Image 1 (tube, rainbow, N blue to C red):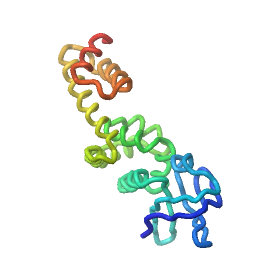
Image 2 (image 1 turned 90 degrees about the horizontal axis):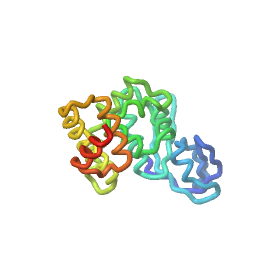
Image 3 (image 1 turned 135 degrees about the vertical axis):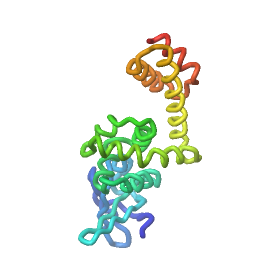
Image 4 (image 1 turned 30 degrees about the vertical axis):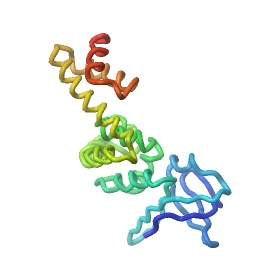
Length: 197
C-alpha cells in the first residue's frame, strides 16, 4: 500500500520514529540498523512495510529497500513475525543475516534473541535458495562472493576429509581461512588448510 514516507523526523528512538509529512505524524517501527543511519531534524525518507491485522495496524520503516526486502523474506518464514524479523535486523546487519543463511550458519541465527534451533533451521531451508538467486544479480554482489566461497569450502572439505583429516578440524580451519579471505581459490584453500592441519 505504501512504498515510502518522506518527511521530517520529530521523534527518534532506537525502536521507533515519528515522521511528519503534511502535518501528520506517522509512528513507524524501525530496527537498530535503520536507527544508526538516521539523524534528528533532517528530512528523511523511510521505505515502508504496512502490517495489517484485524486488531492491529503497524508501519515498519527501513532506511533502504534492501533491508525492507530482507524483512519481507524473513516474515514469509513460518514462526517469524514482524517483531522477530525486526529483532533479527537489529541484532545482525542484512549482509550478516544473508551470509548466515547462505553458509548454513545455524549458530549465528540462534544467537539472535527469540530464534531457536527449529526456527533457525526453517530459515535456512526456506530462504537459502532466495538468497543465492539474489546473489546472482548486480544489486548484491556480496552474496555471490559468499555463495562462491561456500561452494569452494564444501569441495575443499570433501577433499581434505578424503585425505584422512577429521571433519571437525577441517571445518574449523576452512572457516578461519574463509573469514580471512572469502575469495581464495579451491586450490589455495586446500594448500593453506594442509599447512594448518
